[in-house]
Image 1 (cartoon, helix red, strand yellow):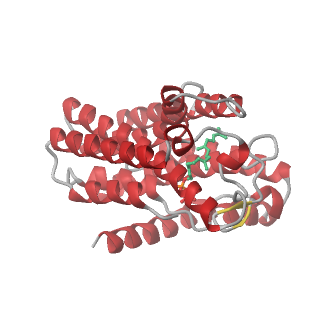
Image 2: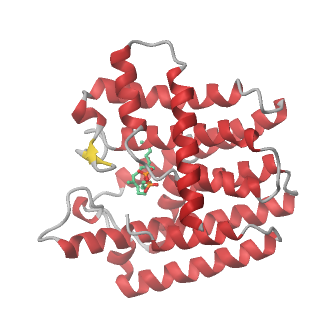
Length: 291
Ligand code: GRG
């Protein structure tokens, strides 16, 4: 059931993404690089989360499409820039060469910048959103991805290389770096669906725990990767001397903590009084995913 839901949403998002990108009047060589970044098979978890939250309130399906596409553009930009030599310096992403390897660094920077900017264009010009819905969506996106959100998280993350962080410091980095955008996905979905302010608050807390669960599982997957090969896998955070949850807590305690955050998220879901079990299934996927 959830697998079908995800596959259906992925294919809808991928089709709509192509429509949106192919409208751009740009040289075909540049378009090739943009499509390379977007067609690389990301899981589309964030827009799916946004759509699932929105659907809990049963509104017309079109309204959520542009915010969902914009969210995936912002997420993809962040991965492209994160992979650059000046940042994490990764050669592979989503099972293929990173865009700066396949093309060149300048192209990767420009595709990233362009996707971020286009995300704001797609929302602000959407014919399905009212003016105040656009303002809310753009505000959430800019706060979550900007200096007080993802960029702050990335800055702290880069500064923390070769340092031993405590659990509180690690939580802070991940709440900003990956959590902020996940929370924005949920808040926008809830607001556009017509949630009440207390419901938005409970769902925002659900998103806070979901973000931590996502990151702890990411770190746990790094450990499984380490066990699968001799030496550290290229690209894992531990291999780059970054603190991870299993490293500072031990693997068993990291798993226990993930489960405790999953329980907190379930409580917040109950508190919101919405009926959308797909959100709980997505929580399980975030917490138990293997890739
Ligand atoms: C460069 C401003 C700037 C920010 C980068 C999000 C981020 C900040 C960096 C990503 C680094 C990273 C690999 C973090 C681990 C968690 C994460 C975001 C994984 C990738 O998300 P998935 O698994 O990826 O949803 P797909 O490819 O499925 O979209």
